[in-house]
Length: 312
Image 1: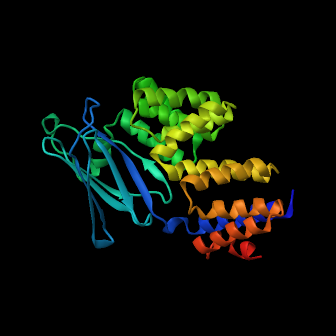
Image 2: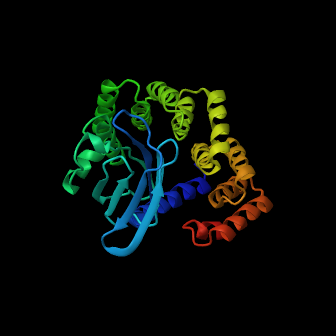
Image 3: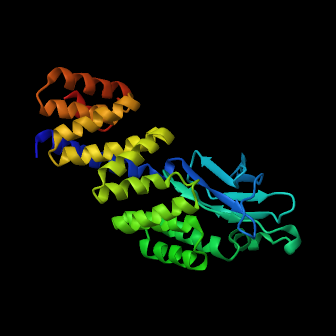
């Protein structure tokens, strides 16, 4: 392996360690859907997030016409209080809600019609929120997946699918477990089933891309990547960057360079891509191009852990 490649790997590891140290201070996102007791999405549910340790903090969201919501928090540290309400349904209140840092955590909820039973107490909020059924099982699988407990996550998603073979999001959860296990064909099968039953889950495209790539089906992987670039250029760029970095570290510099140049076509200010492309040109002894991209990297990310290497 060339000296630049070794540097890239070592500094990459340093970057990951630094990122891990700051993990708890970073923002996080929780998203999902709210359903009624018949499994139908509920629009117009008011969601209020508060922080018991900061009385001035209050964040409100409302589910859209498909029952979808997204809650973004600037800090993952607090244990938030989450309340959901809509006329005609029993309100729920959950204490100690944690939103993991640097993740998009999916969590679904059930609201019970007001006529079905008396409103639950706060201590019963968790049970009411999960309905004691398939959504509860699914949420347990999500929490296990976020904790990287793949055995528990797989068991929970399998249980949810057994209870309701049309619950598309459980297939999506299973696909994500199988993706982590690099069981490409099974991951692909579950991802396709998830997309069929739950087409709103566009994030499953990331699993499809990884599965097609793992199976060597480059044409289909490229097709999915184009969809991802249209829907979410940043996420598509991350997939491409990882692919390029793998090629670079494997000594396939020409192939890596082509991918890094492709990223810059849609994300011209992607700092780390300029860095890696600069290293590619260093390896080719193209000093002018190397200086151009490493200089741009330093402009965009002067405090990056790899800045010293770029200066050198």
